[in-house]
Image 1 (cartoon, one colour):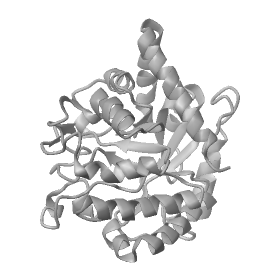
Image 2 (cartoon, one colour):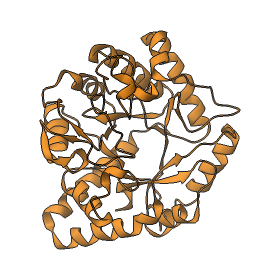
Image 3 (cartoon, rainbow, N blue to C red):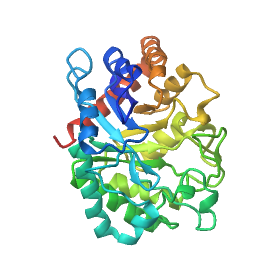
Image 4 (cartoon, rainbow, N blue to C red):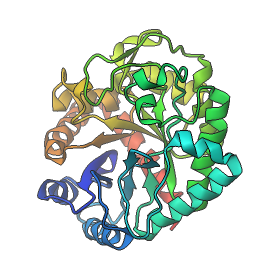
Length: 331
């Protein structure tokens, strides 16, 4: 069960709640959060302390996915000696696809040197226009977009993803089905809605191309999509996960949530509801920025699986999907 959770660990060193989640609740995946300017050697020591929790009693000896947000610009968790200063996606776009792929391979090798094997990047959201970008709270405001046309976003974003894969780092493209049309940011605002995106939207192309390229992880947005499933935020939407991402796009890998623990968008739901809703709707791995909330979520999923055979089947299938993704990761 713990393989279905990815919990935050401070990049400067994990706190006791993270270690409890790994040791007592068998959580099989972590992501380095916050910021560390201490460099690659210090990051490697933090990762080693996390990997030391792997044992037959905790993860069944399965290795951890160790992730971080190393996009560039404002979103670069690890810096200092051994890590390049990565420009934001808007600036990366000027490199062109070939140079961007080779640059991303370098950035990926830097992550691998510190023991990080998953990058929660690249952003494949297409922002509506340069004029709209400053109003686009989650993406454009921070220059996280590769452009304003889905074709350009696909070519450049997937070049970044392929560079990471060249280095043996698994990219987690985000934020399906796109955050380039919203105004507020789901991290700090509630009831964030996209009133434009449809099931056959042109802006889905970068994600579809990433799936065709064989990647293993897709991260969801946490917004509502009024023209797709107005009643459910994306991580609670079987239409978005099963019908669109699994069915329409043919994705067979890990459907990763964005943070379902600390984001303001999730405030209306209890911890138990967040976890049960996500896995019940077809999610594979739940990201949690607050490790202290893992016990309630883990217990809720365990209890629901004991009571509901259909839910248990979904959980079991999700575990298999995670194991396949881990088996495909470079050693």
